[in-house]
Length: 230
Image 1: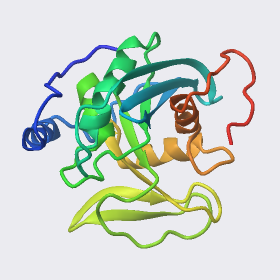
Image 2: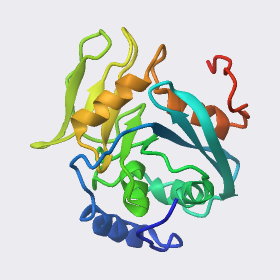
Image 3: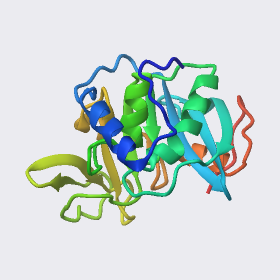
Image 4: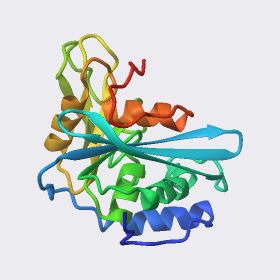
């Protein structure tokens, strides 16, 4: 996957914030999606001071894995809330550059616009590679919301002041909701549709479920039926 926008990663937190503010002006919040035949899940795991990124590409709508890559590198940026893309971004970019296929859509285990400066990792990396992307997080970073109803597909707006920054989505009956937000080149309604379509029997979308296990060390056999991941 080709990088369209570049910046340094070896920066101070203050410089990182300035980079986020520059990237924010490049975000496209309208649909620029063509036909979606493949979706990639992106997740990062940590072992001590090493980060391991997994990108798993699934055929859509079948949600069968067809490709995946792993990348490792030492963690060099401190843990700073709101700047996690600078801890995870370098290893994610390494993995995306090694990817043999070119997925139509990326779903990140993390935030997109639902971020204090509207540049979570799904937005940050989506802009760098100029690909449609969605943030799908398990917890809230900022904003307020009402609780959606308990049935699958129920939603509630996530707002920060007068701005809608994401959607709180119940992906299965009675489970804790997910926080879905625009990454890049996808509108919020479409992001919610794809997240729900990728949630078959579980809370998390299948691309993220696969990426989470691969980032944790599991290996996939492509082209064969996969055992249940959870």
